[in-house]
Amino acid sequence: MNTLSEENYLKCIYRLWQDKGQKITPTAIADSLGNNPASVVDMIRKLTDKQLIVYDKKKGVELTPAGLKDATLIVRRHRLWEVFLLEKLGYHWDEIHDIAEEMEHIKDLTLADRLDKFLGFPEYDPHGDPIPKANGKMAKRYSTTLADVKAGGHCRVVAVKDTTSQFLQYLQKLGINIGTRIQLLEKIAFDNSLVISINGEEQKTVSQKFGESLLIDL
Amino acid sequence: MNTLSEENYLKCIYRLWQDKGQKITPTAIADSLGNNPASVVDMIRKLTDKQLIVYDKKKGVELTPAGLKDATLIVRRHRLWEVFLLEKLGYHWDEIHDIAEEMEHIKDLTLADRLDKFLGFPEYDPHGDPIPKANGKMAKRYSTTLADVKAGGHCRVVAVKDTTSQFLQYLQKLGINIGTRIQLLEKIAFDNSLVISINGEEQKTVSQKFGESLLIDL
DNA sequence: TAATAAAATTAGCCTTGTCTAATTTTATTT
DNA sequence: AAATAAAATTAGACAAGGCTAATTTTATTA
Ligand SMILES: [Mn+2]
Ligand SMILES: [Mn+2]
Ligand SMILES: [Mn+2]
Ligand SMILES: [Mn+2]
Image 1 (cartoon, rainbow over the protein chains, first blue to last red):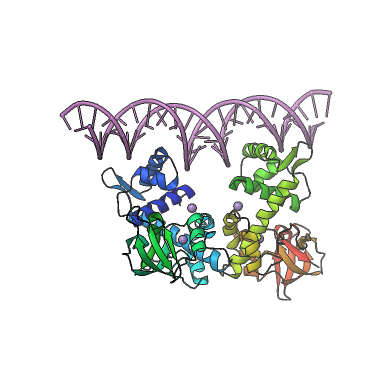
Image 2: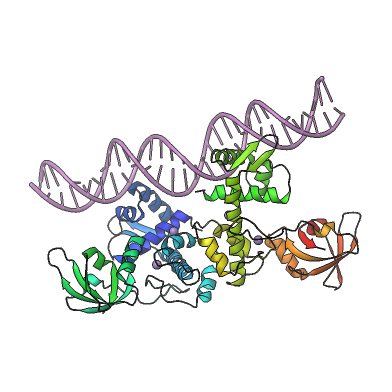
């Protein structure tokens, strides 16, 4: 049985592994969790002792099969609870992440499966992230961002890479949701700002960071 | 904001206060939580500093209005989650308490109220305990136990005082639920064992401890 | 390659929440 | 009232999980 902290580290490592296929370093983990690298080194030792990760100076941190299984279950619970909070309790898009951050740690063998069934086996969470099935498999994850679209191109929003309420509320203000159609009218060469048209409406300009936070399907 | 441990202590004090109107001592709290009295003394200091309890050597521990408010909210969340787990996720009577023990600590201002609404504002939890409303008020709590019934008397089970799976599974085996009618046929003078008839069926003998754990309405 | 910068690690400290053992207070019995 | 038992408290320890500051490694840059 893993502690709450161990679970949060596992989930963080899982996310870094999915996001960038890059080397997962103590500093990367520290940045991601808002912790000190020294604390991360301590936890790397604990998780290594529990055989949930392997740490190699060259390759960085990697999840073992056991660690991947544990991490996947935490992600499954997180995303299922997000669906519950949005669909059953009527929370908004930007409110659910932090609550699910706590709920994902509720430990009961059959809870995730019962919740999954109760929710009708959803494939994606409200942010467009695929929900791992009981067997660990999950639907397609998208990786193309709005910033990757070429000028003139059309696309459809399928997921958000950033789940902070700041970003989600900004999206709401712009009228962007999962499924919204966007046309990239122009890329400003100077700072990679993006001029877009949302659902065919009047154009808006958004930053490069914004574009990189929105996952799309062409 | 209270920590998980502080919340568990507050809830424990609340329960001891409701159960017996008696003096709440460090040893009583220690026994109830399975902790050491020395640890309890430490926590009494913390909760006193936070002005959630008042501790008087003569009167024992008492909740302040602020402490009572916090404790009531934890109990509200616990009982609402129990209803959710039983009614929506299909858990059994004896499985829900331990899970709710974790879920009661999820912190979000509107969560209890949303859950309450989603569940249709239930008055009682699956163990027959009244669920505090948002304003802190709650339906009648029963205090008469099967052990208080006089020989020959009839009664109806309204709640269980003990929520351990051992007791609940025993009840299940005997065919006793909330609402079950019981006739007390005889009290054995020797050890206060009770000879009962469940829903008018063949007689069974149960212990005094059993009788004191079952709340009834005459 | 040497100098410098960045990353990783170690050492030592802190808080929370727990424990055991020893001591002091309070209650109960003779 | 004195003796004894029980309860409460203090003192000191420990594990988890975090921090800062110092040091050692590893990468970069000149
Ligand atoms: Mn979390
Ligand atoms: Mn999500
Ligand atoms: Mn609890
Ligand atoms: Mn209950």
